[in-house]
Length: 262
Image (cartoon, rainbow, N blue to C red; front, side, top):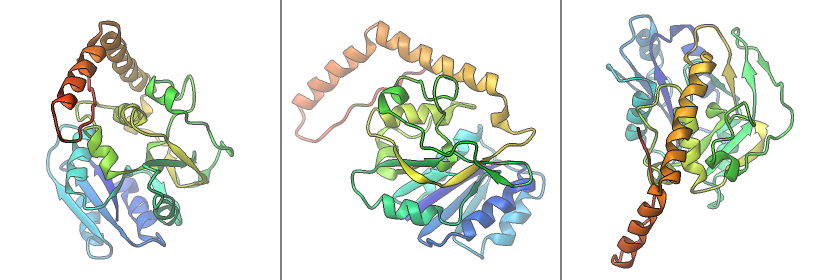
């Protein structure tokens, strides 16, 4: 099953487009989990309208931001493939069918598609018609963020539940760059595979949280600085030596993941 998580807060303007893009999927083994932050507009009415029309579950309660809501959603998820689709973005009709087929390959833990966008009216356009190269080395070292090299479009990414849990999930303390942080963690564990198809589109419109690019890049810079500091002062080496000691004295399989916070 594919679990799709959507965080919402006062999202009535675009939410129905998002929902309908999921309902139109040819692949039916999915669930849609909407985590609302206590909307005061018509968002809840829309969720009530659709809750019996397709595999939708939703909650509405205060949260500590978008990534806190996303973490809640993935804790509710029952599928073995995860993604999150923001309330103003949309899938293509074939998206889940492609994902379900590709991820039957046990080597594939994380995939994305060709970059694509929607304008404010939901009209799709594709400024990039060739596959970007998402090399794990560049991802794990913080290069794939849209300035140095391509950015990885979050709404087009799908990954296994096992991979998500292995890296400790998404950081709820991030405000804007939680996707970037998650990709860096994924890249330390596996490769990102690109399928030669548009899987989803990012809607560009006024007032969106991701529209503040300066703040987004500032948060990325902060994350990269923390990682560089940890590397420079030997924290990774110390953690790795501790891991080897634990592994040597344990009969159980173990793995190492290091998360460095401020």
